[in-house]
Length: 218
Length: 378
Figure 1 (cartoon, rainbow over the protein chains, first blue to last red):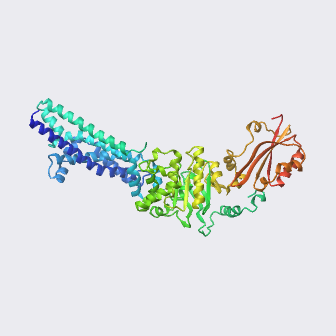
Figure 2 (tube, rainbow over the protein chains, first blue to last red):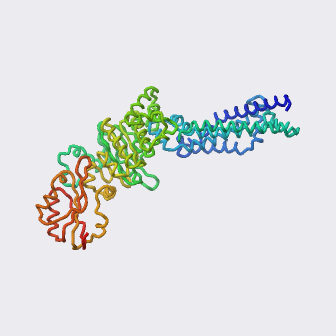
Figure 3 (tube, rainbow over the protein chains, first blue to last red):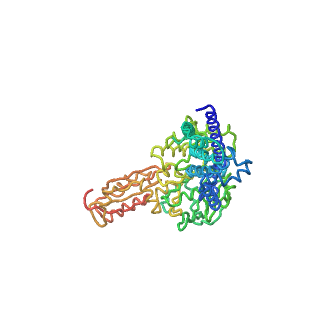
């Protein structure tokens, strides 16, 4: 591999890490509260409101049912509004985040829902309010699941970010298509695949380690 | 109370309890509450669909006492205990906690009040993600106490429940009994005026149950803490309760000092709940009993209090000549009062002789029942 190509590979790795990391972080910041809202407003939840629950659910399902490649193009005006441009790595972060947030909301919802109702009742019996229940019970008790779900989301984002090459976002997927596929440079393709495998395994390993450390259920 | 008057002699505790059933007779009467009543329920009703979980419950829990509420599953126990801290709302009726009516309070007003009430759960409900000391300190964290104070209190409470060395451990590493000790420590953290125990020992083995009950009793005596516990096991009531209320189909069917209810159960449900721990005629004999004449007649004698302190059997032998034999039974002690059941077999079926025996025993405060006769030797 030529030094130029090698430099290109390094840059692509950085772009992929940047896209995955930034959109992952954004999906965590918005997705977890959404997941909490879904659980809290559901029947028997700490802020039961079936109305809100249905509307939220419908919006999330709507976003999740649009294929990412279409979302990528459809969101171009929004991206332009937020980032100022619709091309490049930062521009790709907008559709990636918007796709990952409802995804992560559903994943965290599952973990939060698994928290034993008895624990919520215990906190209520101690005189805790909703905020206490979220802070002391729901989130800490669901934390291993929340982290495991975040790991899954990050891995999914690594894959999705490859598609963002379609809007000139760069990254490893873009590199693999332009050099490995269109220019028949097999060694680039192989290098990209190896890097992706290492990246995904690394994320998964870190996530698993963190979950093991957080999980005190014995 | 229909029992012999001898039962009630000189027992100050008994006299104190005498006014309680008066409330039952007139459930809607509102009596001014002194500080002595930690809990007072008046005509509590709660329906779930077509079934009435609570169908007019009135009860009083006095300061410093342990009141046990017993009933089968589905009798309304859980709904009742959850009405006391507002986790459940009654459809009608009133709940007074330390004289304050709480059944119409909003969630926000209930929160400070719930800090006055500790609760212990059947399945412990400890937070897995927190250490033992953080679990114990949680009620204080909810109250907004500084960390140093919370931890100091946790140390103190873990010492009280005998789990000091487990402070930094996580609940997953504890046994069931240890988990419930943590649950009790946590319930005491905010220095409550009342402790609610929701089947606290039902998930534990008999030995652990005994140690947890001993701990609750110890807390009651040492801290003077008022305890209301619900259970489906008479053994729990027997071990620690001062008074018992029997609930069935959402109604209190019987209430009184534990030893009196044990000595003289009024309702069928109480008798059946007591069945597990009171002496019963061995099934081999019971199945052969028949009316009419026979070789032997079997009598059941229930004794309690004063009647059980007398040399009853030797007096019977002297007072009514004729042989009899003790088949089964014994005298137990409940709340330091003798309570017992004896099964006697008298040869033959001479009605006049049996009547003399019965009268003799009844005159001495015992309850006597002729169970039947057996045709051949047993």
